[in-house]
Length: 130
Image 1: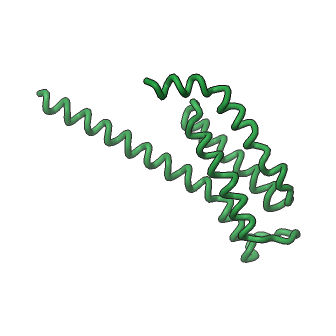
Image 2 (image 1 turned 90 degrees about the horizontal axis):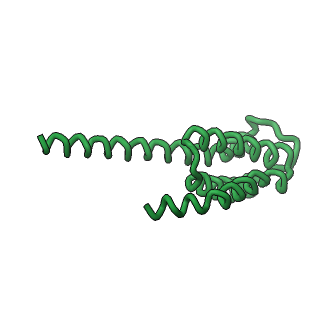
Image 3 (image 1 turned 60 degrees about the vertical axis):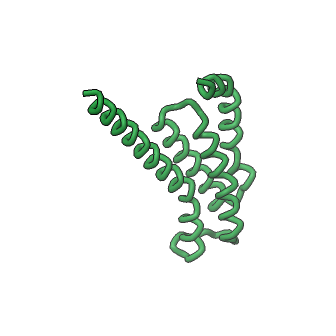
């Protein structure tokens, strides 16, 4: 019976690892969504009245999405709240970076994310120690 309990625990741990892997995949796809908009604008599928540089857009998308995903990973929120926040902030970034060409306004969501991370830092450190 002890063997069956150990096997059940291993199965449960494996399912949790698979779930974490799927979540990480979803997050990385969402981080790369602005690239799809950049490519669509570059090939002409989406009209943008302003001058558009795909390489600059890609660099900006990485400089926005990767820190946001890293900060979101550390925050102590539920997964659904993290995903919805990432979707909203990516939409914000796409609108202001690609369509309005206001780079300073596109990066504004990084400030509240950083502030939230700093507020939660003591709890994050306590959780990491456990």
